[in-house]
Image 1 (tube, rainbow over the protein chains, first blue to last red):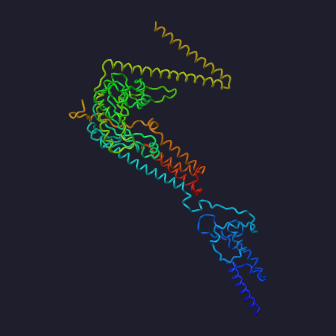
Image 2: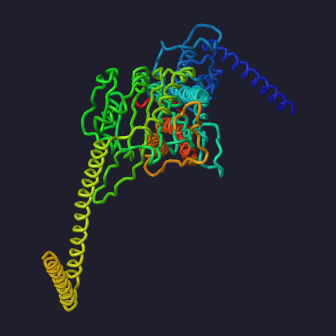
Image 3: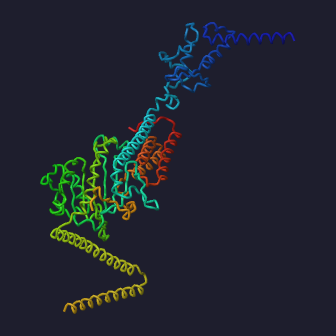
Length: 483
Length: 106
């Protein structure tokens, strides 16, 4: 028992001393003291523990905090790790162990550490572990861009809406005094004025007016700039464009004579002449200057015949045109209006497009993009001009010569058109016939049975003979009739 | 008949209803931007999803926004919404798969 007790006491003392030694050791006391043979065992342990215990990961980033990770084994080649061990083994200074001492400690590489033969590589901590918002700068940029786009959308939409409302408020009285129906979207059962614009888009507003002498109706389209689209706004900074008001008056057949006439800016007329079916067919000359009538240089005239120009350019019209020349883009009166030229598809015979007697007006809103609601008042006189033109178109009649010329022109155009389509139709029929023949021949060739082949060939021959006979009969009949 | 203050030019018996212009050729003539942007948006979002390119997904979001801003009121909102949702999902999926911040493509 006594021996056992003694043994226990010794063990206890042993344990406590070793712990104390451990602590002392961690506090970085001189290792020289422990060279005693009694504690040789601890020396080995100490050596191992020297490397094991203070294994710290000093991350190579800007964070102030150090993350302490206890690692097993020496596979992790962290920079501060072996340096700590080395310092502990070789350092003879008796400083207390300080965490901050090893920050930025790069002077003693000491790669001769026996623990690892791998070269020390500095590993960058991946960006998503860095936990800093700065690395996401591109994303923040993108989101900011999106927010800017949305803001611009809202602002642009509101501005366009305000401009449209301002225009309508300015013109409402004039329209209501001239038309029974002001504002219709075609969905109501009864023809009652809605009294407001149809919004087709964030930048296009329509208004349909009807119920007046001379005309079937008038469609006004407010084509604003795409203020709701940021890309468009930026593009417009390079190239200023104006808002436009397009008015299309559909006349009654009996209330307008047959003529084609246009006046506007030179650029607009050149474009219209190329694009519009009727202008290209009836007004083949280049736009002429209107100086003869006292028009400013910015405006030019396209006309079917001189008489029409003379008739159209009366004093009041000239007054309108000269005073508001900057706001006029184009004015186009036509009894053969069918819209822009439709591109012909190959092999498809065209029908003569439907025409309507129409007066078209395109006005530019002043401000060249930087428009304010009060600018809409400047367009009111132009609407007066429209009303005046409607009445004028009803009053203006061509004299006999003019009428004859006009009729001749229209007949000529129709003939040309038929000729064109006739040729096309013939070609189409011819090609169809050839295809049929080819298909039959192929069928005969592909037929494997020689008997069948012979029979089909004979049938084809017979059909052709019949056709020839028929043609001959027809020719004979025509000859007889001619005689 | 002249539109002076004496006679009223209005004729209630001659009222014609509004007929929206035929939409066969008009949408193409008017402005192809929303359709192009819609298509581009879908292509970019598919690229972003398949090739795991974050910038593709972001461009797709922008395209769908532009398409929406330029769209006509007669156009189907379902189409807009589907393209928008596709682009948002492309962005979200790119970030779920790879939470690293985006690197510029240049």
